[in-house]
Length: 424
Image 1 (cartoon, rainbow, N blue to C red):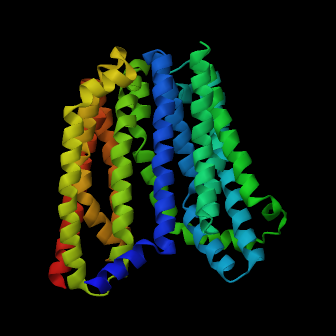
Image 2 (cartoon, one colour; image 1 turned 60 degrees about the horizontal axis):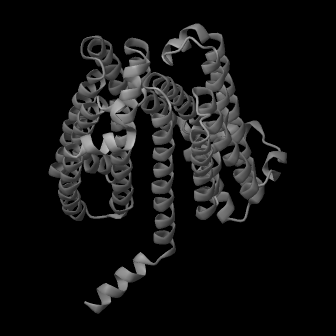
């Protein structure tokens, strides 16, 4: 028994474990700061203006996700590999190639947004051209916020990575709180506070990384290797980024700013469930990757599935206490968001059940292509269901779509996993 305890303590205090604790704490802190930022803006703006803000924020996040095109995986893989061998020159080349590629993609997408501004304005539920300009400005800001933490993780500088991530949240919360206290909080100043947060991420990011990597030469083959490595990962991330954000944009177009604002409150509250699920998946991934015995994998997978039951119970409790929680934090004006959040949380239960199976497919079976195939079905199904349901049942439309798609995912993933382990 003593030997097992010593082994457990050794694992819990290893450098990998410590790095995991740092990143997990950073993710939780960043999510909490994001929640506070949303809370202050929701209380300070009208429901309609908050709906516009949420639609712009959602669009910016889509653009930021598109800018990745899977190169974050290549960034971490190449930079960490060369850095571990002491080859700083090549690590800087891939770092620069990743940065330049992101800038180019964001520039092209932003140009497209400006050209298609009359149509894009419908996506943010506003006729004000200023919302389009802010979408472009904030997209470039989030480019840096997405780049620097990953780059620092590739160099295994996890504390610095968290510092950059959290810097954006801290500055946003402080600036928007100051605006609320002084009575200067408007839709425009909300965007300004968001931009100040991204500026903080830029400054802190360059402080830790320095700018020397921008001076190295980057031959075409560097870009070719980076993009080739990204391959399927890029396609999957682009599809997932769009399908995961279609709800807010389609609501903005088809239901207007007020319903979008109510829905966005529910979405922000449900973010904590998403963080919990992603953290659970992150815990499963390395264990499922390490097994070399399918029988042990199967036993661990059964145990992991049982762990989803208390998570689901926690979600059920949150559903029950949603009304006083929403009213206390956001005010009576967001009372319609209670039912939306309850349905939103309920729609995620099948996704929680699917998590162990999806993680096993990727890390045990080494078949991420199965999840990639599903992502194409997912985006088409979500779009069509939202198109059909939003005009009929409003904000409940995307939630019905999520429940249906998540249920199909759970059945699909578990059928693959059960067939795999039965065959073995």
